[in-house]
Image (cartoon, rainbow over all chains, first blue to last red; front, top):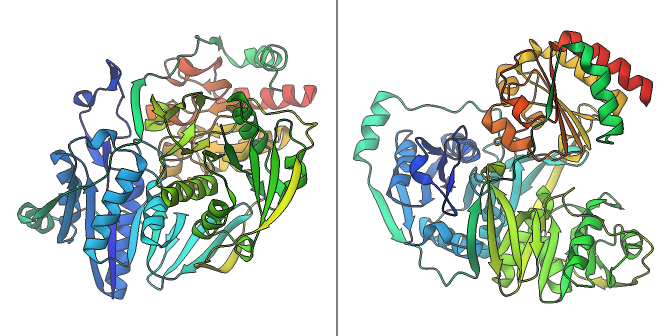
Length: 246
Length: 307
């Protein structure tokens, strides 16, 4: 039996255009919100782990009411314990605040294992898994691409990869795995409608990071476009003489 | 300002990004202390200009990678102030844990840093940037190939400290890479193929070119999703790897927004695509409107001439 907490973050669809208005990313322009892709692989790994070893999953998110969707999607695949952490200033929480709020929820869930994505598709920081592990006094295995219910995990190394085991409690952060992500059936979706979400406060200390603003990335000056493969020698010449990269 | 740098190592050697970390630290007016895991790369670190001191942190935990154990050892060896590491997988893990141990904030993948401490880092894989200021101590990782490296000719004093941490991760089996090919994360030149390559077999043409250039071969999400032969480890983009090489050659890649997010900060971008309307041309420094079948052989010949 294993108790797994899965951390699911709601992010804009990765195909969404990100627009900055008045120094902030304009969330109202985002049409589609999804579960952060790496978190989906973590969730699938947790489903397989609990199916094989027995036990249960608690799905935890941090965010506004719209983030209930990621929990409902987990409920549609059979997860019954759903927790959303809500903080008024949730957008500007610093790394310590996010980690301590999530670590509190993991502890409350009584989980031995925490599965999450290696990083979120919005902030891209990759701090949450290792940071929570530190707070929980747990090991953290990062960028896992394969896992099994015996508790063995495949992680990358400079020379290839290695299969590791870990004593619990542990945090495992996932990259893309070979697992096909399952989609809920009609019965699951009906069940998810009735699923109860527990909303808890983050109960965090003050932020130590001052948010100055968002901006659009610097635009490159337009490049040159050449017609046809006859132009290849000229481009190679420019790469050598103008760009000096060859 | 006291700055401690966690050296990035490659086996027993210092990774070149370490000089970039030192360059950033000295630009802030610091004379940083460099910590070397298990003493790896300590001599090379002492030779980087501007380094104040090199500490070889020696302990049993450094025989394998366990971010928790390493963070405990580094935390004990490092002074207060600012901790700087590389935004690699291991660097992010260790630095995040040091920050959590100290209850100080961590800001990862920083691309600009100035006194204050004001930092800019990409969000949404570079579709936007975020600027933050941290008044007190903090931990930071810096994106590679972004900060000018410090030169050599340094002669910092070196010392050894014994520090270790509890290792909780046990390596059961090491698996060598299937091929000796360079990873896109480490490459200075990347040639990426998209679904326009037509079949995974045609990536052989990209490998042949990459061998000439010492380049890594990457792929778009469309290619990775379509062909099992193209592994996710090659994927460049928002749900793959974010790269910033000196030269990025995109072949048969239309330039979906999620791909552009992962490669747009490359210093020079060459795009080869038969569709003149492909969005990749908007970010390309040099666009070639052509089929890859026609352009690649000429590209290979021309490169062979000048190398």
